[in-house]
Amino acid sequence: MLTRPLLVMVLLLTGCVAVRPALSSAAVAASLSASGLPVSDVRVFTAADDPNKLLGRPNQYIGKVSWKDLREPDDDATIEVFPDTATLKARTTYTETISKSAGMFAQYIVPNEQRLALMRLPHRLTPDDAEAYKAWFAAL
Image 1: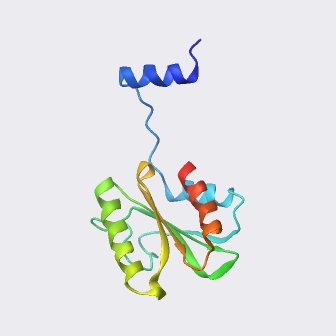
Image 2: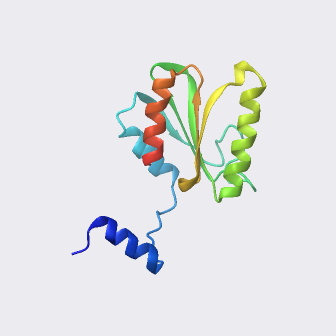
């Protein structure tokens, strides 16, 4: 019987690396709701109700979920899912530029390249609160 590290090495050497399935908005919402984090109003958007009118449009995200943290219920947090790394990186750069432009636009911006997703959290969350979301997001 192969140990886990040996199995991983065999898979890497043979090119048989397991690929994680594409991340869906429904999967994000379900994981977030079950995370134990203080979330409410978890919402999965469609192309018809996305307030930014970007969902599914060319060179934009293909999935979007928003929620409220119970400690800062006036601001939404979001996760956007992208079709490829280039689109994720472009959106990350865009949101970082806006976030740095003025204090009122500041937010935590957390890309997850492995899952082709971008999480944005309200700047009013404490760094420790944001770290809890970052840990959950990294394990998604």
